Each structure stands twice: as structure tokens, then as C-alpha cells.
Image 1 (cartoon, rainbow, N blue to C red):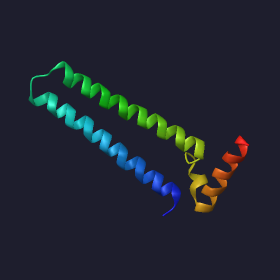
Image 2: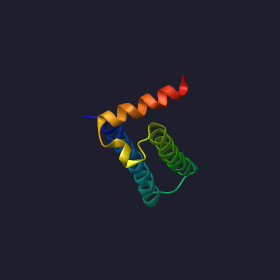
Image 3: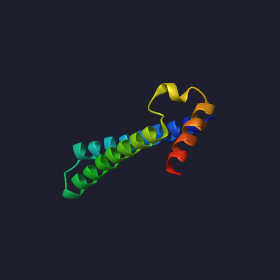
Length: 89
């Protein structure tokens, strides 16, 4: 499995988990008396998802994975990461 595929799988699974968490908290609000804590939990869950999306977007941009032409092969992925590392030295 290529490195970018592992990253993509992680991002997909984590995002699914965070979205499911939000859905569950919303369902909780529908079927019981709403408390301040329930609202705070939902706000925190939504902010976690928002931050996760922002960070993964930055990671994809840094690695050059946001351009489909850059991820055609693992060799391109390695070249991209080497270019990025050489910019820091």
C-alpha cells in the first residue's frame, strides 16, 4: 500500500468517526431533555471535525497531494516529499 493511500484511509476513517460522533450527539438532543452539557458536547464535536478537516487540508497541501497529477505513483509521492524536505535545508 502506498503512503498516500495509508494517509487517505486514515483521513477517511477518522472523518467518518467524527461525523458519526456528531450525528449521535444530535440524536441525543432529539430524544431527551436538552442540557447545557449536551450543547457543549455537540459544539466541541463540531469544532473537532472542523479542525480535523483544516489540518488534513494543510497536510495534503504541504505534501502536494491536493493535485491528482502528483499522486499517480509512489515514486511521484517520494519525489514530492524530497522536494519539500530540500526546501527546508
